[in-house]
Length: 303
Ligand SMILES: [Mn+2]
Image (cartoon, rainbow, N blue to C red; front, side):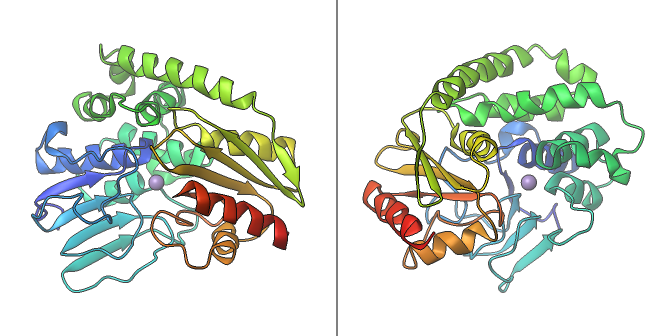
């Protein structure tokens, strides 16, 4: 079914790129044949993908989509397959698996180190207990994960090169010795300085809701939210970036209790699009500044 797709569109984090590299290898394609979407774009937005179908959507979630598609994913599905669509979902698997692990099951002779990069990227050290990662040398995979994850956090980072590194090397050690690793290291360093800067912004805490607002060209909001969740245990934490996409406020929400997607939907019941997707305990969205203000007011009103 993967071979019947016209092209592969992977998410650009380590799990998505690892799944993409496994799919491209199985299809005999190079990295440039894949469709890597720009910051803020998803395959579910009208006009983002070329018209050709079917398309393989890797690690993007399962959402309402026009046309035939193969979904390979592990997020909570938000739609059921319509005509011409196939959904391969690992959601609910125990223990949890990443999209790279799932993709590795669908192709013959997957590169195990690539499966591992995706699994560790999404699941952290819990990934090492998976049978697919049995007996693997951990250190080089652990070093690769933050490097592969770095490019998409920059406005125009070397995402294609990260995918090439996964696709064109025989093992994790060879990948670390790839000359293109320098570009990934530079991307990581640049991102790191942006992250450190954003961490210096003080939160505003009111009614159990902490908000941290800053302007950064880097994708730092998810990790800023995570960092403050540890420091402000018990609070709902919203980290908001006013300079990620022009005219939008991109935010991540963590902490609190229960399903944070449901909390967001109750704060802004009418909101559609990039809002409250992802995981129950790790979600966020992209809003107009006005909608973002209303959301914060509503969250503080109900906390
Ligand atoms: Mn994933």
